[in-house]
Image (tube, rainbow, N blue to C red; front, side, top):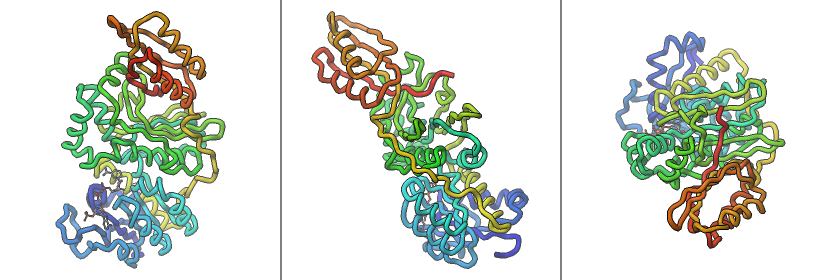
Length: 430
Ligand SMILES: NC(=O)c1ccc[n+]([C@@H]2O[C@H](COP(=O)([O-])OP(=O)(O)OC[C@H]3O[C@@H](n4cnc5c(N)ncnc54)[C@H](OP(=O)(O)O)[C@@H]3O)[C@@H](O)[C@H]2O)c1
């Protein structure tokens, strides 16, 4: 290592990678002041090394071979910004084997192969930093791992996918249909041409797994997270929610109850007065509930090259300081082996809207099914037309499995013509 300079090998120079190169150049003096050294990007791996790029680096620094960047003796620190599982996983393991710390923004990789990577980092006594992997530019991982080390987090509720939050905001505030809002999100560059990872909740589930692992000191992987996307949220659901004083959001929820962890991603009605209800457009926010500090909310831009690059550069500075002075940051904190609570055993509150025959005895018949499944009703009211009525229910907190069984039974009742909206209700009014 040249004295006073830590040499960074960049794997990926796309939206985030290019912004990291620019930020290191534009704010180089300030960064050197904090890091105690200069950070210089000496090698960059991309898919197509011949393509012109919006970064000022000598062309000789680019290669299409990420393994060569990791192995290069002129690279001290590896920054993985390619995304996806392979070759990112293999290259990160090679970096640790070569004694080089790693900074990554790759939530998909961490939520699926985190254990292997953290084991390798810890075994070699090297840093693996990943601040940018959840909520982009919002400082969240470090506050949770370090600043809140004395806190016991009970629950976190997060809006961690900007694309779906943008779509739901368009539907709620501008009356757009899901299809129109998705098209607009694609025009603005918020949504990919294939929006599956966002719309079906895969991206949020990976982030939920990472947050739950840190919050509860246990390994939660993407497959442990119950997942429902927003493709079935209808304008009617949104209108019903608004009428009752709620806003529909795609939430990532992680809870610790009786030593068991539940982790889930699904659309939910949030009271309009809850801090998460005012998180609009592509913004992200994570709301934490703890024993001592109480409620905290982290809010800001969850994506975008420049915003995300600030999180990456913060990690690069920490890793560079450790390289120069020795030591390393807090490693893997998944030291417990907590049981994952199956979705059916979680408890929640529910909103249900039924189209029913308007005749005497129907309400009693329906209420009987709720009662037999142990689901108690907090509020019920009827909105009627000549021969058909709409019955609207909000339950008390009930077991998910019991509620779903009730809905299944109601679907089969002759008096029930159709089940309209079924939505979970989350977050208490402050
Ligand atoms: N974009 C955001 O706002 C954001 C926010 C938070 C976290 N992240 C995470 O940051 C990471 C990077 O995202 P991004 O948006 O910057 O992606 P991107 O724009 O698609 O850039 C990916 C870069 O990696 C290179 N690359 C991909 N596969 C490669 C391979 N096999 N070999 C060599 N180079 C390869 C690409 O090369 P070419 O340029 O030649 O195609 C490109 O430079 C992802 O893990 C993402 O989840 C992104």
